[in-house]
Amino acid sequence: MICRQKSEQLFAEALKCIPGGVNSPVRAFRAVGGQPFFACKAKGASVWDVDGNRYVDYVGTWGPAILGHAEPSIIKAVQVAAESGTSFGIPNPSEVTMAKLICSWVPSVQKVRMCNSGTEATMSAIRLARGFTKRDKIIKFDGCYHGHHDSLLVKAGSGALTFGHPDSAGVPAAFTQHTIVLPYNDVDAVRAAFAANKGQIAGIIVEPVPGNAGLYLPRPGYLEALSQITREDGALLIFDEVMTGFRLAKGGAQERFGITPDLSCFGKVIGGGLPVGAFGGRAEIMDCLAPLGPVYQAGTLSGNPVAMAAGIAALSRLEETGAYASLEAIGAELEAGLRDAARQAGVPVQFNRCGSMFCGYFTSSPVHNLDDAMKSDRERFKKYFHGMLEEGVYLAPSQFEAGFISTAHGPEEIGQTVRAAAKVMKSL
Ligand SMILES: *Cc1c(COP(=O)(O)O)cnc(C)c1O
Image (tube, rainbow, N blue to C red):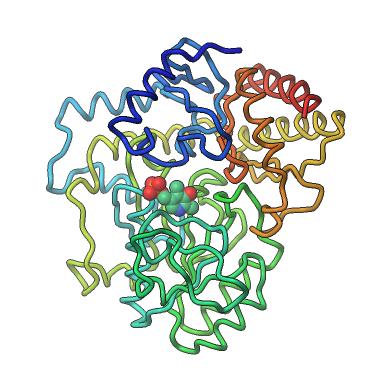
């Protein structure tokens, strides 16, 4: 057994002064049992815990670490920026550089506003969609996560067209009554919702490739249908690319699938590991934001110079290194190795992958939506997770999270992961 004595001590102290010992619930390992380790260093594809154990990391700080941890050009950019002041509260040149970069990488974005998290980005995009269309209702999909703000914190209603029930205590039902929750990958459900709510739906918000219930892909034609239905009704299509943006391609999922959404939300990769979010889209819509228009949105630290420097460095590095082609190749290699390990062990696994995002579900039937994902054997996943951790491979501590590959994952890391999986799968 790997020794995690110092982590255990820290967790005991943390439990006394931080709710559940963590500052974000998924870190608490509740879904897999046991206790989290405490990290003190991360470099490349590796993370080290306070007891000195090293793990090959597929969490990648939940998405941002696409270039691996502590990428030298990002560290340098942060140091240089911090020397000149950590926050100004008045425009700074890096905000313009960042906005130009986003607009050139993502053609559907003509104007962009920076904020501090993915949650802020989706919250503001929803408000903007409502302000622009002068409609209240929003469609979201089962299993899609858009951050922790009130109106989108709703999971599955029972069956299509049910109005949302809040997913959390402390969210008044009135706050989610305008949220319609539908199954993902079901065009008929969307058509029916629009037919039943003519002229009332402000927009659809969707993770184009949902990565918050594991990972599943849009069926051919699905995203196109969302685009067409919203356009015909005068509603907006909002792509939540907080996870997929700048990860699945330079232009995110929308580039990969050839869709032009009205608004897009970003976070994770664009912060280079610092807290950043952004939302943008058609100029005509974005100009409804204050100070030009009536939709209010603001942020004391928005466009922060240190965060902008980190993000700009990350995007520049992705471009210079031709990262997307290598991520695809590493992803394919990992997929082939893990599929093989499962086959040899005779363990049924559905391996879904899109570029550098992946999820292996322990089930024998294909996974296209949340209901399919729920069929996976979570007890088996728990054993697999802890077995892999013992072998020095850190996967996200839940069956319902995507794994992330970075450009720092090389043949050595992939080899270690595949050998570990082959061993652990046989013991399941
Ligand atoms: C992570 C995530 C968010 C929330 O971003 P935070 O920075 O954690 O607030 C929103 N949408 C998607 C798709 C995400 O993956």
